[in-house]
Image (tube, rainbow, N blue to C red; front, side, top):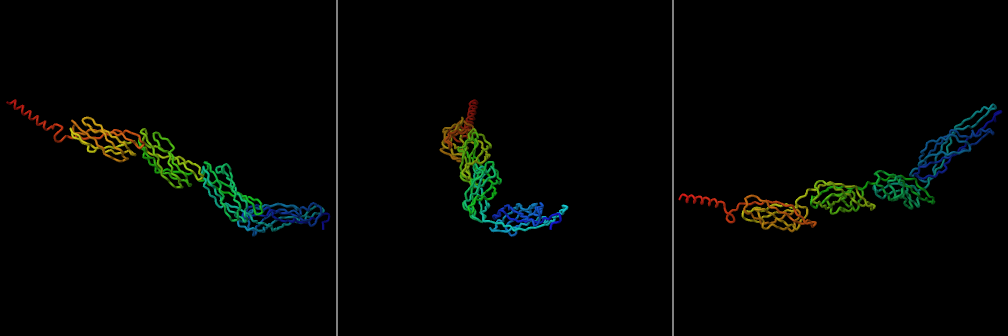
Length: 512
């Protein structure tokens, strides 16, 4: 009964709870909106304007518990404040659905704590009293885990090199419970150094994709010459239709690609037979120090050196796999004007990468020596002696000291008085490098003292290029010996005897 001259109002909040969009899929991280409705009831009261106070839920807190559902509630208890009667509010909770969650309907528990005034009494004098209560409501809300396709990246492969194009392969698996139809996968580069031609993304069609099935989708990617050996970010997104023909798009799946370094080459075992005034060879070994196969490899000499002329600047060594090596050599002519000493030669390796694009390595410098010029021949005397007043046949051993075969060799010998040469020329058809032969000349001596006299000889010859050259002049000694026996000269002993006889006869005649 109302108080005399006053009034009484009584009632309570009437709460209910539900999840608006309660459909999720296995492996999904999402946010659930828990909707709290207050249909507050007034049990007794008049139009005093205090009815709203007895139906108002104050100091409300909401806690969501997963129970036996295969989900994890990531949000702690939420504070709502107050919820008047005839009002509703949405309380968000982040959840993670287990990867292996079976499709079906599950129950979650929502626990709501709040305070309210169950009765408000006002006396005739206007004094009010409040009956306050604390209430806990527990609600069972449903969560539905549906069949759905879901995608994960399980592997990535790349052979993209810095400054070149290559293939990026992305292996993905449908880890969901439903077949995806009309599937396409878009791969997007999140940087400017690795691109799909002129575009930052590319899409490939994958078709029907069953649960548990893995597919590898390949993309052509180019790495700029400024790219570094670091992990560049990419994002893959699958678009597909479900069993009802409804279009879906997966969350973006992150992945990284590390470009391979440019193919490196190394020169080793570089040797030179170069000598001033001669043709020689520059040889060595080139090795592929990169991680990929280099096709159609050509070693090319790039720099120009004065008075050193390559016959050919390129040498093809073919295909070199990682770690493989091949030998090369280049013929180089060193003119007579060339200088001896260390010289730097710069090579590059030209090749084709795995996409067939022509590439050129960094410079490959090497330092070799050019030897001083040498005589084309070495000569030495054989049987080099002659008696004064007589003649003999001497032999001269000739050795080819050049690095090539010499031909049409004409030798000519010269002598000064008292040495004479009656047969001054000899001919050698061909003489290989390092080979020797002996040629003969007829030499005489007249009025010579017993000592050594010089003979000079030179050679005119053809090299392997067909050029006719004239050698330096060589000097060899010849020994002149005193003649033994008669003929030719007048013996000094007879001269002595004659002088003695003349003196003796003159003395005798004078005495007589």
